[in-house]
Image (tube, rainbow, N blue to C red; front, side, top):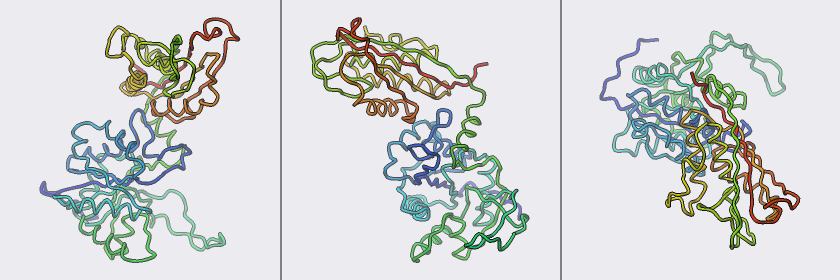
Length: 406
């Protein structure tokens, strides 16, 4: 390959991160780019990887219209220098090609149109600074170039019946990665030409550039620049990002008495009842117990030490505030919530009809999958204050994974 040329400071480099896919093959209930890796989403890590090279002056993500809330949550974790370079997102189309073009058109409408563009998969969070640097320099020197790594398996070409028709030599093959790198005007023109043709659907930008007649070159990729696709990929990625960890378990307990009212709040869910629960805040015993369980696992005091009942600002407060704060404390420590389990103790109301709503509410507040939240209910066989229908109690256990302290 021709040696890289020094990229002048006047050259404007932009990064386009394609994050509009649904990515449900990992078996969870949200797109993979919004899954957590040690306190940060895959998307946030991908943004930071590109932003590590200060020559990347603007970053635009193409997202699905339904993912706006998850996207905002993801970029809130970015440091100020990175966040200021992130542009408002564009909305993707029905195909990868349409999504890529949507991002390019959004950049083309900016006051400062990029000279070079790096197009990156949101699901590649481990892109190294050296690879980003090679991408920028390749785009400047070649016009169209993509990273590639050697193919280690023998590849067979087969027909529709599964019969082998050819065995390409491995020396002639590369497994390609992103970021793919181009002159911006070259790629935009190629995309516009492809969009005007019927029956054309490309799955990467290099293929569009090739179709438009531009030579595309391959530069050295990075074996660590893996794409997260399967659940096994995510297990390996979490081990990589968490490093050496320990599992912590905390226990929480709370109780509140009944008072005059027409509903109770349990796990953030309003449940019709003959009474309400009395307390300084909204008296949500479930969220209080879970919050204390998390604080216990962190060895970080209890709910009363963080939110004193003597403080008037917490009078009538939504208990979500308390739990969200506890979850944030986990993230600050670089940890993650592995599992939450709670038992609600009362004679009434009946919890069964509301169990899944409570689980969904807790999962949403804590930013975990619903399959990591257990909710059970029991009575005390009419014994004690709950048996006399004087109030409701809740117990909770929180299991966390925390980086091991030195």
